[in-house]
Picture 1 (cartoon, rainbow, N blue to C red):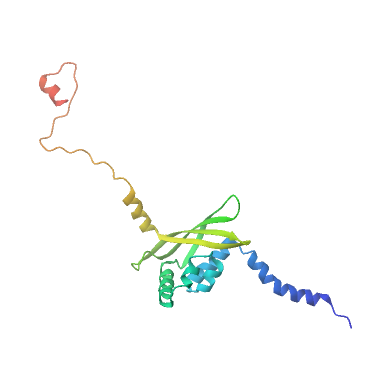
Picture 2: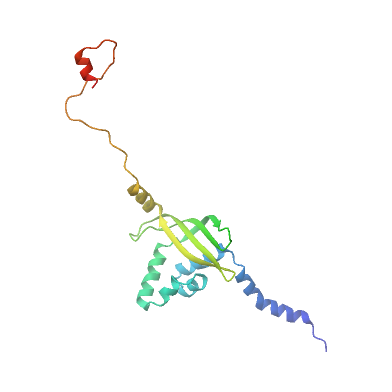
Length: 180
């Protein structure tokens, strides 16, 4: 009785393909998994696709603190987002992605346009999310306005309006006084 090797190879490939696919996930796909995990308050997936720290530290907190932090995170994350740019480091081991989205702005309950910065690193051949920051555009504009130096105000003097100075080849004492 002859057995074919083809079915055995097919079975082996079925077990190996998920591992290969996970190892080859591009950074956007990895961030999409983390983003979805944040919206679903799924701490296990946040830890799985993130670097040590952050979610791992959160997992060590008491359950009420962990629950409150996950709910707050869900509120400030944009529900939908779009990656607008990617900048890979020269060594190919870190990546900064920028994105836009719509969601809650701050903790006041209002919503609007958001800008995000996602930093990723390659660890063990896999992309991991290292840091995620989303902020509302209104908040950024207010922050920029607060740090900008104010425009100088024109000098104001109290008193009567002075007649304009007009230089002439020959001037009286009164005309010269107006030009001082």
